[in-house]
Length: 83
Image (cartoon, rainbow, N blue to C red):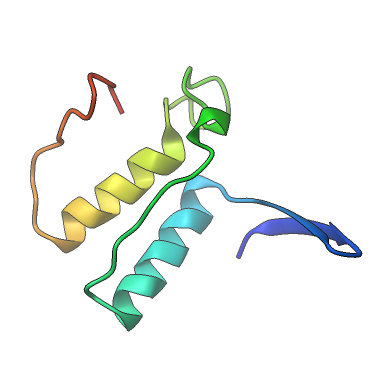
């Protein structure tokens, strides 16, 4: 589902907005009452300079999926960030 590499005990992986959405969708299908936490968001594309030109693309993808799955039509402004 996502790119990764490893050497002995060290793993490094990378998720795009598409792969993280697939993972969250799969988890929600398996266990509907699940909580999510995003770590290392300081590595997120907060300027929207990468592919897609969207700021915080992975966080936005998770939010959009959760809004869709819970029938929420509005975006919640968290901490003044424009996701």
